[in-house]
Amino acid sequence: MRRRVDAVISMGEVGSAIFQLLAEGTDIGLIGQDLDAEKNRLLRFPSSKDQPVDVLHICFPCVNDEAFMNSVMDWTKKYPCKELVIHSTVKPGTTMKLQQKMQTPVVFSPVRGVHSRMLTDLKRYTKCWATHPSPSIREQVKIFPQEMKQCGVKTKMWKTVPDALELAKILMDTTYYGWLIIFAQHVKHVCDRHGIDEDVVWEFTEEIHEILGNRPKMYSGEGIGGHCILPNLELLNDEFLDIVFAHDRYYERRLKRDE
Image (cartoon, rainbow, N blue to C red; front, side):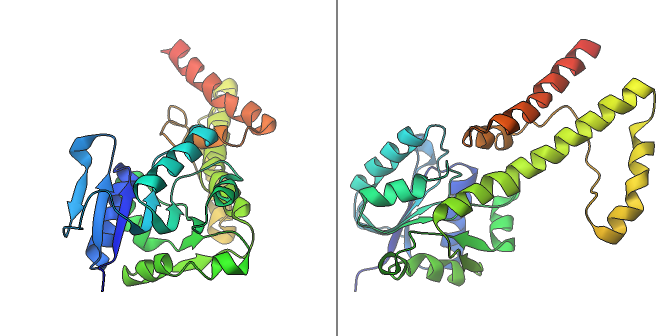
């Protein structure tokens, strides 16, 4: 019986964590591929570097949806697979468009967590996944959920089209967090304008948050920063959110002006 083999494409913080998760939790062969040859990894000696695999894990970022899909298709030619799993944050509609180009079931399963502790967070959060709503396609997706279970990771299949999960990743994970940071920035801006210590104003929410849990105190810091929130927002191309998040650039300019 042929040994099961998976390939993980892009060995950055997400891909490396997926690779390590599978290496520790399963006995399958693993191939880790990256544009940086020094990051490439070959574990448990699969038969060759260019071969059919069971699951192809896509972990490189999506900046342009067409370029992303073309790159994914190129990797599927190099590593023909039984299941294609996209862990990257993508523009809504990407999974369905890819499925139209492929016979292999395409699964969208975004990651949740902080990049610097991604392996820990992969084990902490439920790994939601979505695919084409057709029963004939959904019934083919068996290996990926089984592997996650072996690794001690809970999974949940979304019953709607993948677009809903693609939107949820952007809106309810990174954009929501960024929204809270922007509000904190504006609180500081208004407090400074009135000559009030922002911490004194935030005190008013402490008991409300303790009872209701919906008034978290955020710190304005020096802007949103990071490499997820703003790039993910660009995938939506939402005029209202673009206007709101422009406040982050305004706040950054004001900080530099006040230095």
